[in-house]
Length: 461
Ligand code: UD1
Ligand code: CA
Image (tube, rainbow, N blue to C red; front, side):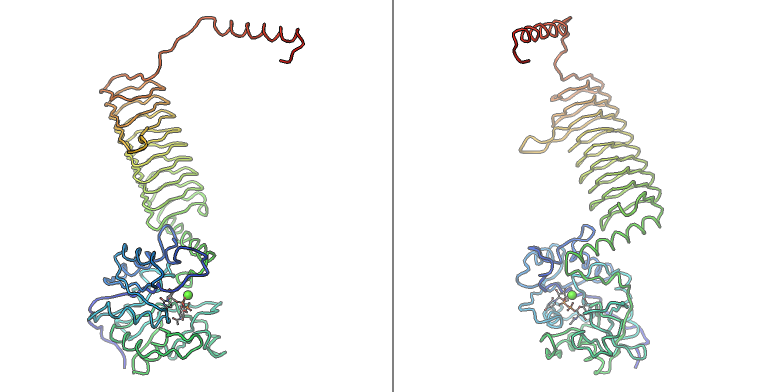
């Protein structure tokens, strides 16, 4: 029997298994809430399912994992509680009630395997639609260790054997089980209900589903994936390895797209970093979540950016920190030791040195002098600073918000500006300078006389 005709499928669902204990992480926080590239592993897997066209996602959670429960809810997943945890097969059974009369295809995913690509999961669903009843994502490795082994015959999958149950011949097989398995909901739940726990671990293994369905006369197939995608995270070491694998992937992706990375291994990206071609990035730059960089921008070394939108042909850094809500418009500049938060910096405006700009709206062509600080917080609330086009902010200005500086206004250096400034006005917010002729010389002379006197008297200076 072969499935040569494409079935009409009533949608795709996914069951994410996240009920396991995560003792090896040595963490108060559940394992699947640790982040890779700034996104929790659970969110990675939920995103994976969604980008493979899955509409309905059930997350299987243990009673003790309250943090996972909350995160799953925030991610818009449905939650099935598995208590106690009797194995991966049992976990899938716990999700059945939440799929009601769903009669499409269902994939089982593990929440601790964050790097699988949507394209690979799509191939699993496609295999199911076109040429088998149960598809298992497998990968070849020279170190199969404790992974389940995929036993194939004539291009078809015969069964999955857990390492603990495998014969020496089976153990020598290098094709391993990633954990991802898909079948129609009908086949999946009919088989999982027949799984027994008479094995080395006394657990209900999901992997037994393959042999059960094959004995029903159904066809099982392995869909091959890259070993790097399958990396499962069980410890902090694995987490670091997953992070490195993710970063390596992002670095090559950006370079392939025409982004210059001066020292790729020292540049870190987040899961959602977007960078257009013809951008240059110096060494030691870190992108937190939510960054977009438009073409022609240059990010000099040692910058930290998060939630920042960097416009065309801008110059950032070195040593700039752009916090969430920073929006640098075309041709603007944020130089060394400049921190910006929740502010729009208009076209061609420049903040070249040593400034803090928070909760501000800066117009076009504004020059912000060195040492300018927006005093945006009074200990209770944050207030806004608005600066009109073409204004000149003298060095070492303290802009006490709420404050509006008119277009074309000129602020003298060292001002503490507490009142709004009209368009084109000069604002001076500093004490008037007083020069006392000859004072310094008189002072020095007096000091010299005093110390001479002390020396004559034998005293210490
Ligand atoms: C499983 C597979 C193995 C595969 C390996 C890939 C089985 C029996 N074995 O082994 O073939 O090579 O993954 O990494 O499936 N979980 C629950 N409830 C439970 C038990 C587990 O939700 O009762 C969850 C865990 O949180 C985890 C996933 O299922 O996300 C896998 O469980 P784990 O115990 O790590 O399986 P492995 O022994 O690694
Ligand atoms: Ca595991």
